[in-house]
Image 1 (cartoon, rainbow, N blue to C red):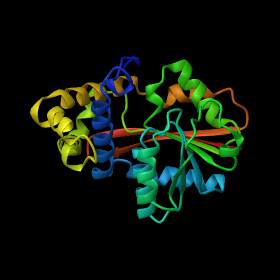
Image 2 (cartoon, helix red, strand yellow):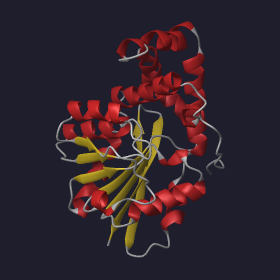
Image 3 (spheres, rainbow, N blue to C red):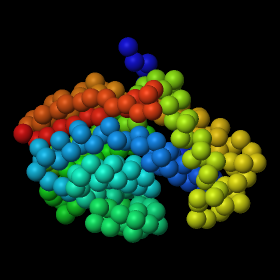
Image 4 (cartoon, one colour):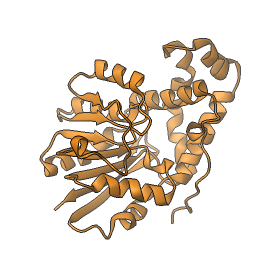
Length: 260
């Protein structure tokens, strides 16, 4: 039986937390996803969704800095699955997105204007499956419900994935790649390297924040049953879900819907 969901705070969501600290934690998480090939288990269910929708176009909602979409795009490419991601967010991170577009031309692009996931413009959404990757847990239930239902508006299909389940012990699976990714931040970052070194090498600040945010993310995670409840009254949809594993101990969930 899963633990009750708790909407505790994360530093990553808090505007009062220093931006360099938030960037260091988020970039390290994206690096950990890539190094650990943590999202490889999503390739099969995601490619099946695209096949059922008859599209290779994906509107990535709540994309943040774009790390999860970039990692999933790379995993799909390794398996020969074509997909084109259009990154969107209410707070666009254009600098990060431009770098990803240069890194993966033809696979990643972005909309530079703010996009509210609860009110997706038809010009962006038409013909595109919707993806919400490692993002829905940030929202409290009423807003998560609005985001998920908004993603369904005019969509041929919707795919939600979270790299954690509601069990704090599972966060330990990130340690093998998460710790090297965090401590490599001052070397691999393209700005504020001295500040990042202070946060990661000279003090335990970034490590403590990463552990806190990661643990809270597990307690915020939605289970498939929660997601089914949010969309159960939407007519004309067929929903399914499953889990994926990584690193021997890690486990995440995916939730997929196709318009009938």
